[in-house]
Length: 442
Image 1 (cartoon, one colour):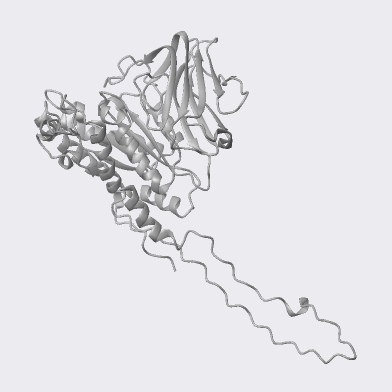
Image 2 (cartoon, helix red, strand yellow; image 1 turned 90 degrees about the horizontal axis):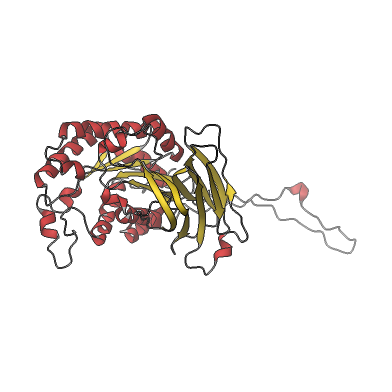
């Protein structure tokens, strides 16, 4: 898929991405150097000057799409392709266990980045031991606590302020700390870090150490004016010329002290020429639409606005389908409510709603929730990806888990790694559907 997308776009943009040649002007006659005439030399006759023909600037491909539901997101991809965008095109993926391990979302990130540029891993949880990201490895020391204790609840817990990803992690024993190391694929020249944290007591603090810079020392992040809200500290760092030949370069060490809590770290490339794609995986095992709606709205919208997303993916519904009586009417309304929250962060954000996948233990429930999410997507003006039908419809998971090379795990609910990764291609095809940058501007 990535190869096909790259090939199609490279054929379109190859004529328009280079700098246009500048017209060549003829020298002014008054500025021309004329040799002195000697008495013994014949007269010199100058040839009349001719102007070089002006060279027309190369045509720039025009943005064309027939997909009105994804036109803003696709326009951001177009701008990346012609070098007219200075910041990444960002995607927020709100999901459940299907997205939490980042196999599915990670493949989408990879396919889009291969074509439109890699802006980095995006949002990362810190100190969460049951967590995985495609592009980053974590070395976690000590003991950590999670808040809220039931992160998949659908009712408000405490003050409802849990950061962009819905989880707060704090260390409490055995010198807790977390080191980040990059995989072999991503090698930017410079990186930005946006660390989110919360302090509760006067003695609380968070230390950050840049592990990629030789002889760097840990620095304490600013405390801020209030210990009742989330704080952010932003910095740029790292010259990757120092990391040549290192298979897994160390990136950063974050150490919390006291009751300090970490609500995530955003890592992106600093490259205005090629800002690329950034996909934030914000999925939680067991999450429902009600999970995200139970967070404090103002606090979460503030965090989402920092990301300036161009697209939100809502990949939820499988857990609701497992309920004995799926609240289908409620789910239909919740789709629009969740999209409305994201649009408060960016009014022009596009949305893609993903149907629930099949469940061998709740085939009827999945069919009902699928219809509810489809109606909800239509009401909210979102694109819709029907993976339930794509994977074979009702009863598909009972069949797929029995194949010689199964795509569904034995529980009949979750796909295998291969199964999730194969869903990346049809999702990218849906995101690019109708995107036809084939016309040129005059």
